[in-house]
Image 1 (spheres, helix red, strand yellow):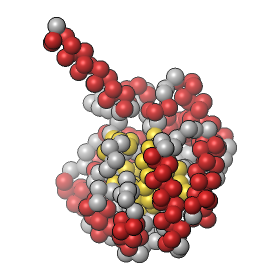
Image 2 (tube, helix red, strand yellow):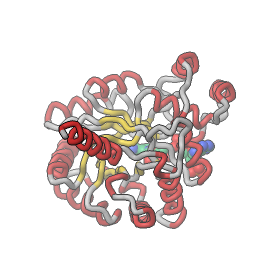
Image 3 (cartoon, helix red, strand yellow):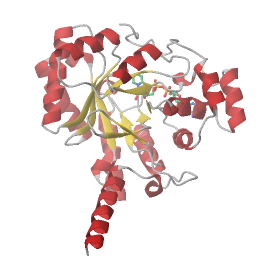
Image 4 (tube, rainbow, N blue to C red):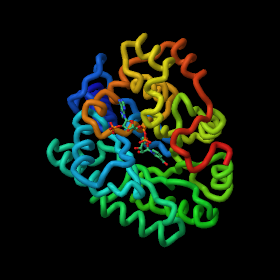
Length: 313
Ligand SMILES: NC(=O)c1ccc[n+]([C@@H]2O[C@H](COP(=O)([O-])OP(=O)(O)OC[C@H]3O[C@@H](n4cnc5c(N)ncnc54)[C@H](OP(=O)(O)O)[C@@H]3O)[C@@H](O)[C@H]2O)c1
């Protein structure tokens, strides 16, 4: 009897874990070893799927809806948007349709959006968060970020306190920052009580920013790597091509896999169905130590995005 209870309890626990961890098998995507979609643990105890569909420069219309649905059909369980991208409505419509179509519970898809700089300050942040929730047709976000530190330190910290309150109220599950350099982090950590769960910054093999990455890690802040494909500008690089050929993979898959192997959350953007799928397939192989070392030697701080803030800022 005791054994049965234990087994039932254990099974219930496993079911719960399984629920929390989206499984590729459920979504039609099957990795060779049928392994679950990888997640990364955040410093607040929540888990974040390691690959997301980025939607920067995606229009607020059908093309983006199709891309989000294609991504979810492929097995992505994480969408990275922002108020600034002006496509929260399209993303929200697609998510709603897909959840209804598949009968998937809302909590199996991780949704991130960001507060734009002009909305820093107490009241403006509250309004902007409500506005984003309305546009997405959601009750809560899984992750809400300050999109950039902007210039006004006082307003920035007011915004952060609003995020802390929103987290307590359950309107956002996790809170984080983006484009924060070392001194922005120091200032925030000195004045506020909740350590950001993530810092979303430009990171790819040509822009590795190791000092800032190490600093974030030392505080338990997960790196979310944006522009992981260097916006498509480095896919012809001879060294990347060589490694891709050696592994029977595409250059894009090599760049994404390198980032994921370092424990970063990776946010490739694509509106093209076959690329959305092939980017997801970046997660199902392992680069050798030699390949990793060769890629590690590629770059340090060669920004392709005109990143708003540099590592040391
Ligand atoms: N927090 C921030 O300040 C910030 C800044 C930048 C980006 N981000 C986030 O990070 C995401 C990704 O960054 P990003 O959009 O700058 O650049 P990215 O993901 O490095 O590159 C996107 C470009 O690569 C192309 N592409 C995608 N997959 C490909 C593949 N397999 N082969 C060849 N080309 C491919 C895309 O074209 P198609 O769409 O035509 O396929 C698009 O032109 C953004 O969407 C956003 O969510 C955040």
